[in-house]
Image 1: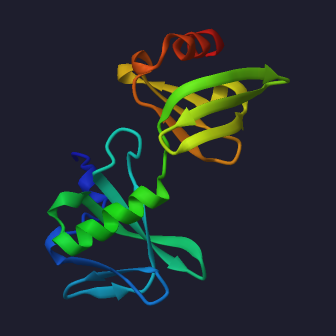
Image 2 (image 1 turned 180 degrees about the vertical axis):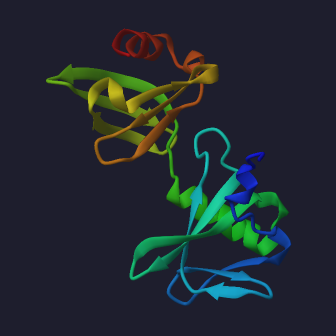
Length: 171
């Protein structure tokens, strides 16, 4: 018997989906001719490499992420209001400032301390040294700090020479 992953996934028809916010700013998902979920959490399937496709929706119960409702394959196929709201929510949830310059990087006892300039201003944060720094294709680097926040270097080659040398030396 041929295995098909589609048999395990519940792909939602974007034409039957409506996404709204309620009076308490919670995201509500309506599947036309089926069901309404009063509070849901959208989760990107591939937040680093393909943020516009494969977004899962989970039902929230008592403030906890519970059952997966299903997956939308392409955000752009939603109606304009739902698409705008979902993109805004995902941008807020997956906020990732872009690092434009590295002022200093120091390591002590397995903890890496960064002092950087981002598109949103100066940030100082710490990581658990190299395990929270991921190189991705095309010179892209994602850094996760000790609090779980993510920072992005879109292309290492676009940094100034000093910043590039610090990155190359330390990671």
